[in-house]
Each structure stands twice: as structure tokens, then as C-alpha cells.
Image (cartoon, rainbow, N blue to C red):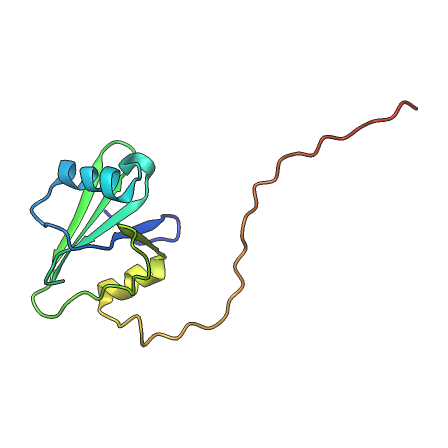
Length: 130
């Protein structure tokens, strides 16, 4: 079972994906286009040209899982892409809005505190003789 959680990082392919690709083809895109490791545990998202199909690729520790959905009506929204990169990072809320068909442009997010973890190395301490 797949769930959208803040525990994962989400990366969306910024180009249109060929939905005929399976596990190996999508892993190849992750390695060659995203320049990332598909075994990282991150979730990789692919949308087709007409934007009515979506695939999510996720390594679950013992194998890959693909979540694949085809809309009978409507399209998925692609977030605004301001880079030439092959992928963009989304947060769990953005992915959920895309999956539910809610326009990302119409959503107004209120300010919230976010804690940014800083990797601090232990400081070397000098002990003077007593």
C-alpha cells in the first residue's frame, strides 16, 4: 500500500513521460535524467503528455512499487517549473493537491514555522591542565 507522507521526498519529472515504461525504464530515467539513485527511498513521479496518467515509483526496501492511475476525466496539473532541471522537488501537500485535482495556483498557504536541521560537527575543545 502506498500513502503520501511527509516522511518521503517527492521528485517530479519535469518532462512528459512515456507511460509504457515499467520498473526498469523508470529506474533508468531516475538514474540518467534525475541524476539520482532509485534505491534512495524517495518517490519519483511521472506524468504523460495529455496529463491524464500518473506513475509513482518507490523503492520499499525489498523491491520497487509502482502506483499507476489513469483519470477518466480531467487532467493532472504540472507545477510551475522555473529550471532546466529534469526534475523538481515537491512536498507531500503539493503532491496530494495534484492527485486530488486542486489547482496549485489557487491555493494560498499561510506562514508556518519550519525547522531546518543543520548538520553540526562536534567542536574540538581544548582542555588546559589544572
